[in-house]
Length: 309
Image (cartoon, rainbow, N blue to C red; front, side, top):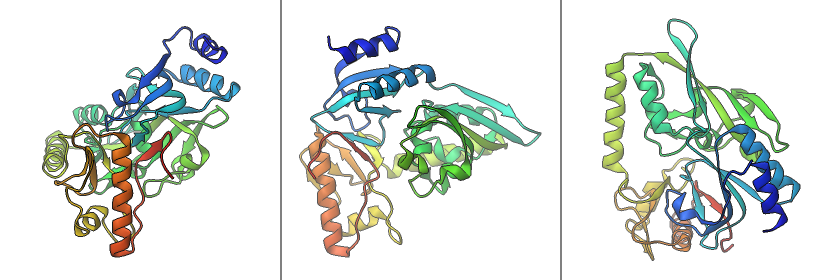
């Protein structure tokens, strides 16, 4: 048992630290080699202690929510993966006045669960986000959006853990939320909690809107296959899925990975794909779209671990 592993166990008060944990069990692509160390964390103090230990021993650290926007290399990840567990997902409702309500949610809260609770409270403004298969932390970090809504439209404040492991509150302006981007990416800060400003609405209309969007997702997105959602960012002036379709790549395959036939903006794990299959497919798509249209597609998914340059 090495010195770092012993120290990590001690810092986490005996919480189980798994060694060589397959990341295919913890990502929505259902691919990925083992994490050298894997820890499921349930609280801010626990996360801080784990990260502090990594910093002290100069061990790489990664923090994940639902693993819904990442592609982990088949070779795995050197260092520690901290994944926010179900206890890192507390939600509270705080009325402001007769119309306005603040919703406070920890970073590990799944957007689907949060959306269901918000709808139950008769609050509107979050309907568009309820079907995204990710967590609050990941959604804030990348300013997730769908069906005309974005996180920046409803956020009032975010609590973060800085690179120096200080807990700080950030206003919406300081987050600098743009299209699938935020200042947090450059700062390498972690989202701990977010506060959303919503309004009271008509429960029937809220439920109707959520059902409508859920139906549209089922109809237009390949939800029956493992994926990481939209694989590429939308290039300015274009739609990634339309470019990929017009390039003749609908259904294009590399090994077990495929450009979805239902929605060309999705790359899916069609049949026992490897991370390398998915990576190579995205590289092929980017190359072919650039050759045909002169447009460079940028991945929306994050690559973790070692991939070819």
